[in-house]
Length: 248
Ligand code: HEM
Image: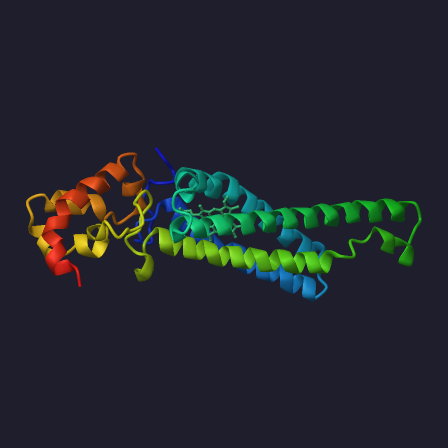
């Protein structure tokens, strides 16, 4: 079973269970956690509150990125971004992935510096150092790095939300552009989903089969290996029937 595709999620969007759970995890847990970490830092509650929240969020983020997002990216985006670089279906996850990776590397660096600071200060205190003498072990540039990390995290999460909306066709302006389908060209006006859904097309003999092939509710249908072939078949079937009525 491919966990990226099955079982179906519970939000009724056509996304998989994993995608739905990931989305909710970010909305309900991770994004609030990122903001809570920032608030703890602003209030000076660096240890243990800020530190614990930062470590928890960063680790959970890595787990989701490695086991889910990189898998989803390799499954669907990698082979298409070269051919359709301007297609938001592939472009948004790519920008999202680059920003997300930078954010995660920065967060991981901050954690490393926090932990190093703790162990160096503890060792210095054992040696009898105290007060201002301990300042040299502090991670003094933490503030700008953490702010940049938080900004990148939030932008990435927002783009992730758009990923979901675009991939599962929840935004009307991006609907009908599932993976594997070529972006509409001048030569192929009949390939647009609106046209293939017209009554004329539905009434042709081949229409039920064609409609099924070109208007998947979910991206899964079009990610199968034979998706391009299906698109061609539908172009051939649908063009004559829709051209007069469907072309404005
Ligand atoms: C700070 C780091 C990141 C955050 C906060 C984040 C957040 C999100 C969210 C909220 C979603 C929507 C839920 C979903 O559709 O599963 C999502 C989806 C996605 N993310 Fe990320 N992400 C991060 C890093 C990355 C990285 C590094 C990559 C790629 C290498 C990536 C690739 C993807 C892809 C391909 C999807 C669509 C998955 C699907 O088909 O449902 N993300 N991300």
